[in-house]
Image 1 (cartoon, rainbow, N blue to C red):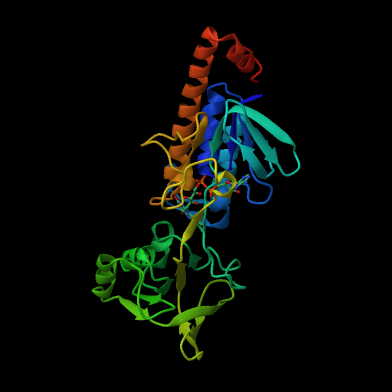
Image 2 (cartoon, rainbow, N blue to C red):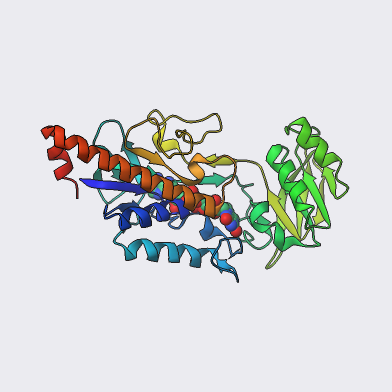
Length: 324
Ligand SMILES: Cc1cc2nc3c(=O)[nH]c(=O)nc-3n(C[C@H](O)[C@H](O)[C@H](O)COP(=O)(O)OP(=O)(O)OC[C@H]3O[C@@H](n4cnc5c(N)ncnc54)[C@H](O)[C@@H]3O)c2cc1C
C-alpha cells in the first residue's frame, strides 16, 4: 500500500509530488496517458510564472516540474484513473492498463477544462491568437482588434480586462441579451472600446499561422459574415474534472470539489484536492502550484496522525506498517 497517490500532472499535481517526495512519502503520481503535463501543455509562452523573467514555453515549464518531482523520488505512471473508491482507510485507485493501487491518502489534482467552440481550426490556432485566459495572454494583444465569445460574467470580465491592451474588443454573443450579472453588463456597456455583436455565433476561424478573422453566422436569419481580428478569446465556461468523484466527494455550487476553508481537506478523511479542480476563480499555474503544496502538507499531517493512532491501536499499526 502507498502512502499517497496523486491524480493529475499539472502544476498542482507535480508540486504536491515535490513536497510529498521531499517528505519521504514516496508518492505515486498518475499522470494521464494523453494529457500529461496539464493545461500548460496547450500553450506557448508563459510570462507570469515567477522565476522565469524571460518567460518560458508551457511544455518546457511542465517538463521542469516533472524533472523536479522525479529528482526526489516521485514514481510517475502515464495512465488514466478510471475508478476510485475513497471511503474508508484504504483508498483504491483503478487505472486504464496499469492495474489497481491502494493508498492511505489521495490527492486529487485533475484540473478543469475550458469549454471549446468545437471548430476545426480551434486546436491548430490555440496559442496562436486563440486563448481561453485573458489574465494569461492579454498582454500579447497590445493595440490589436480582438473578440471575446460569450455572454456570461466571465466573458464580460475578460472583455473589460482586455480593453487595457487591445484597441478594440468585440463581444460575440449568440443571443440579444446577456447572462452576465447587471453590474458586469453595465461595466462592459460603458466601455468605449467594447462593441457587442449580437445574435451571432462563430462558425469558422481563419489564419495560416495566427488568427486573422472569424466567420460569423447570424442566429436569427442564418446569414454569414467575416470579421477581421488579431485574436479570439473564448469565454463560454469551464468544467472542473470531477466525474470520477461524483457520489464520493462533495462538490460546490460551482462544480468544484469542496474543501475545508483554506485547506485541501475534502469531506473524506485522507482525501485532499488541489489546483483548478477546487478553484472557480483564480485558475493560474502559480495558484495551482501553491494549492498542491497545501495538499501535500495536509496529506503529510494526516499520515502522521494515522501513525500516532497506530501506536494506540494494533490493527491500524499493521495497515501503516504495510505502507511503502
Ligand atoms: C491555453 C491556456 C493557457 C494558459 N496560460 C497560462 C499562463 O500563461 N499562466 C498561468 O499562470 N496559467 C495559465 N493557464 C492556466 C493554467 O494552465 C492552469 O491554471 C493550471 O494548469 C492548473 O493546474 P492544475 O494542476 O490544477 O490542472 P491542469 O493543469 O489542468 O492539470 C490536470 C491534470 O490532471 C490530469 N487528469 C485529469 N483527469 C485524470 C485522470 N482521470 N487520470 C489521470 N490524470 C488525470 C490531466 O490530464 C492533467 O494532466 C493557461 C490555461 C490554458 C488552457
